[in-house]
Amino acid sequence: MADLTTNFVGITSPNPFWLASAPPTDKEYNVRRAFEAGWGGVVWKTLGEEGPPVVNVNGPRYGAVWGADRQLLGLNNIELITDRPLEVNLREIAAVKRDYPDRAVIVSLMVPCTEEAWKTILPLVEETGADGVELNFGCPHGMSERGMGSAVGQVPEYITMVTRWVKQYSNLPCIVKLTPNITDIRKPAMAAFEGGADAVSLINTINSITSVDLDLFAPEPTIDGKGAHGGYCGPAVKPIALNMVAEIARDPEMPGLPISGIGGVTTWKDAAEFLALGAGNVQVCTAAMTYGFKVVQEMISGLSQYLDDKGMTLDDLVGRAVPNVSDWQNLNLNYVTKARIDQDACIKCGRCYAACEDTSHQAIDMSEDRVFTVKDDECVACNLCVNVCPVEDCITMERVEAGATDERTGTVVPAEFGDWTTHPNNPMRRTAAE
Ligand SMILES: Cc1cc2nc3c(=O)[nH]c(=O)nc-3n(C[C@H](O)[C@H](O)[C@H](O)COP(=O)(O)O)c2cc1C
Ligand code: SF4
Ligand code: SF4
Image (tube, rainbow, N blue to C red):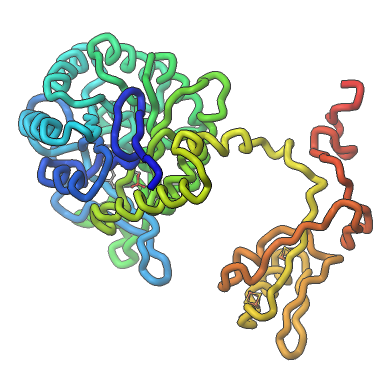
């Protein structure tokens, strides 16, 4: 078994799987059971300032998007930060940390955007023995209307300002949790970096309306005839999160800024992808809410097995794919492939034919007895047929070797690399002299 011990901004945990700040980490009862199941750490459900706790809706707070077999693909929520008293949470955090010293216990915080509010809460958290704080600049509903959460995360100057206060009034490692509800994730990440953040975590949830009740004519979940946008998470948001993590990881202006990857992690493979794109660990919410705490066991065994198979350490994996994340203009235009259909695997459904004939390049032939073959002289290698085929690996993309003729263009495939920056059709191309 590969060693999964993780050191993230000086906080050690037996594995890189932390529960994200959300209902699974809202109370001692949950967190103890999560640790017993094997989670390496938790980010406690966001605490607010002292005083009357926030009030949640008493109607439904979740909406969802399902796949055809009712597999949960996306979850939407309108829940606020913890609605339990501050002192109860602090007491429970101290008790859990005392009993699980080897696990990471991070406290998520969201208080008003004033120096006094941050100065007041930080010592209370430090007294619990917690390992670090995460600043919730991401919650996109309810709290943002009160000038907190994503209302802060959308203004880089505020991010820098609050992060500085936190670094000034606390010795704990500070993780800044970013909202994806912005145009360019590098801006808020840079603001956190400039404020002295020890790390960023992302993504929080995405503004969303998952569905509309067509009898009530109101967004769902519906509260007495009305609905509000919520925050979207779960497997559906993973591609957005991966891209944002990669954008930060490859930005030369934030070299080495540690990243905690969040968004749709459900299996060890999802986690490995975040790690390969530069995350030092991952956080999980929806998968635990869907399948229970024991889902972490598949993540631990799967990641260990993968690392053993590859002969890699966890550190070898972190960031391994970052150098291969590039911009479109740098992709090799001399890399030519063609679709290949495995006739033994084909179930003759005709989806590839419909897709290619109607919306791609009319490159699949259907015979009278429903044998599907690719016309190399038409195939542009778009990969659509691969993605719509219901049989995994039935259609694959095969490389046309250098020196062979691409039947579509009638030209010989060059051996050398050639991208858009030097392509003859590019009016801005670089020349040999440059
Ligand atoms: C019901 C619910 C409540 C959440 N509450 C918080 C919160 O209090 N603080 C926070 O930083 N993030 C909160 N989140 C966001 C999660 O921590 C996480 O960033 C998001 O769900 C994406 O991860 P996932 O795809 O694994 O669910 C909440 C998410 C859900 C579903
Ligand atoms: S790769 Fe694209 S163009 Fe080629 S056969 Fe498939 S759908 Fe058609
Ligand atoms: S989509 Fe796949 S299974 Fe269906 S006809 Fe095409 S190759 Fe065969």
